[in-house]
Image 1 (cartoon, rainbow, N blue to C red):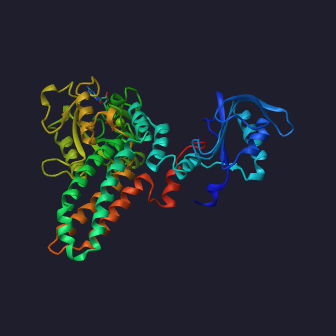
Image 2: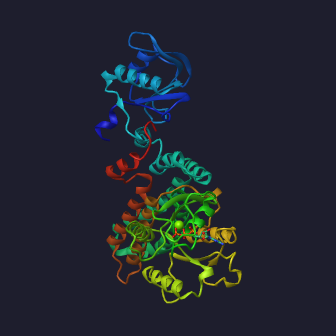
Image 3: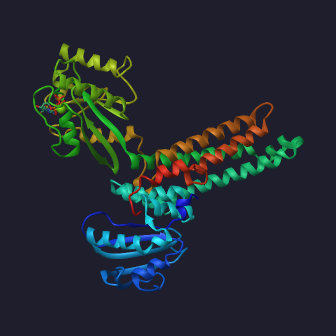
Length: 459
Ligand SMILES: Nc1nc2c(ncn2[C@@H]2O[C@H](COP(=O)(O)OP(=O)(O)OP(=O)(O)O)[C@@H](O)[C@H]2O)c(=O)[nH]1
Ligand SMILES: [Mg+2]
């Protein structure tokens, strides 16, 4: 623990602005001084007491509920005091200032973002994956994301990680024990079916990895860029997907100059859809900057919808320009690329011309939009029922992948013609460490700082 972890902290826990109730929360090893000063004496543990919050001269700042959660039975595991006052910004600032004044002698200071949850983590109230789920629950942009964050917070993800960890611990104990008996190493490991155990661990890990990927998708979504020549209907498609008139649509080619971004959800999976300026060579300075931005969005996209105008199919100029874009998108000879989906728009005007190598739709009538949504979900890699998913982050997926790599190397050492048992033991240790990063058993202070700094203040 760092010195700052020993200092008592205080913050307004409710969102800024006016509200029926506003909460000031303090946490520290011993908050008696603060409680006496503001509440006029000790409080019954975990009971709401209605009382005046006292200023230094004894006059009331506000009347409200005070609750004392004595350590260790609190959110942070420390002494926690919660003051529920009227939810006006000025009242809450007055209360906060009064707390700081009354707590000066015990070193009370304003909490940094996420510091309450960080303490809960440091005091083993939550593991790191659960602490992250707290932030994800607060930040959830869809119902499915919120419910899955709630499952992670309740420990669903941590339990799966715990199961994997137990397997690794058993394997490590087995291998380390054999290191003490060099002559019988091979027999010993064969008898215990070490290889079978590694294979089982990899299978179990793949299951968790799949769940975590789905959870990360639910939390982070994917970035979908609408690209194509001017006037093919990119902005119309964005508006149709979003169900709102977000981007300007006109029959004039080159309407969109800057990117327009909107997050939509399909079955609870957030898709960050970006409409871009139509791709063409132009002498217009503004449009040229727009086109450059389009390309940088395309490069950073998880999926690119390459739009074509069905009514202009066969038009040599249109086809030649599409071919130029295709080249820059690095499509193969058959016009394919894993990230690129061909979308043929304006199907309402050319119903017979729907090609087989993409989706035909009409941004104007909505024809074919459902098929596009299904295709996008599939491309995103979504195949779960949202009810069973727990939230996860890219960080978790990466740690699981690293665990898997070390297990694969461990297996290679085990099955080698002349097995290197020290290296096998080392790979298992590295696999164990990588797994521990998820729940925070092995996590650097830098990473912790990074994770908690993204929380809101007071949480
Ligand atoms: N009939 C029909 N017209 C469409 C459809 N989609 C778009 N349009 C029309 O095509 C024209 C261009 O649409 P936009 O959505 O502005 O096209 P864009 O690709 O964003 O064009 P730029 O911003 O210039 O690159 C407008 O007149 C739209 O009304 C469609 O599905 N059917
Ligand atoms: Mg446009």
